[in-house]
Image 1 (cartoon, rainbow, N blue to C red):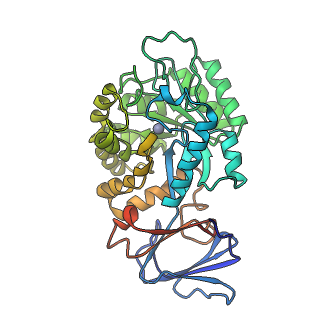
Image 2: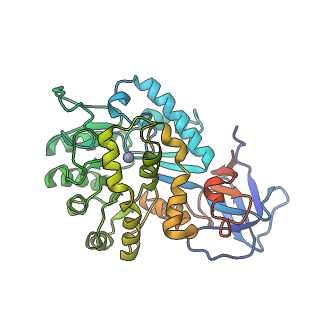
Image 3: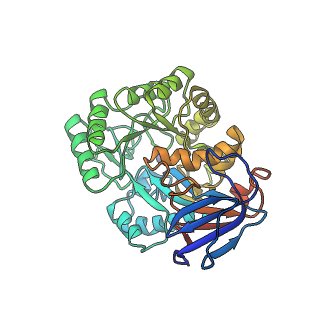
Length: 402
Ligand SMILES: [Zn+2]
């Protein structure tokens, strides 16, 4: 049940935790028409304002998950693609509603999602985070998005989460189609992955010409390409051909991190998916091959974040949880907090992700002019970071209290 945006909302007495703002005594956040109007200790509160007393508590911007899959309702690509899309979409709607209740007021769906789902969300048909989608992730034959069984000789593979598209002209056309339908960005699979059945994890995928074609098309539309890539070879191959964001990046090394910083390429780590698959992989049906590949990237993910930070790479936050693992979404914040502390973890999941999405200053920030996507916690997050992943929270989306 959502309470409609009040004309004026005042959150009082809260410690504000947002990027670029040092710890201060409790402040007031004033919201008007779904947007933050003022933040400070001496903000004048109009008599008509609805007040939320957050004394002793903390307020952060609404969280952003830059790597999720609404349609990732199974860990098995093969199973996923055999189900009718109506079933997958309804399950996906449930996943998005749960993400919103956890405090994710914006998500970027980097594989799956479609214009119909986006339209339903815009029209308020289902409660959901603000929804930016790439459509199916594009994969070469035998790549991470090729869900066919190893001995299958089906000529084509075109699913709801991934499409197999080979060759410069075919890639160009598919990118143009997705952008025509309203895709926020394009997702390319440029290295092997954990859940795909036949590809080595480290191997770069797609030719330079195919990647460049996708990036040229996206750039001309004012969009961008983000790439699933683990190894330095795959990351270098992607960014030298125009990719602007790297997903996962677990096997990153220092020279590659330096080149990412120089080119302004961002990193979206997804630590929780490996952590969750390590703990619950067999329970949720991860294949033997998948478990072996997962072990290879599990520990490297935290090192990648340290290397990226040292080099000056913008670091976002993503979760990439498939199937029943979706309930681990907040645990990603715990893991990123273990590497970088609470301030950085919140910044990655708010302002840094907003910048990656091209929405810097408009979401992910507690400052005048930003959307009033806010989370109110009971307690001091700087003293008790675990409240971020364990504590109760009130969720406010564009000034509307959930
Ligand atoms: Zn993913």
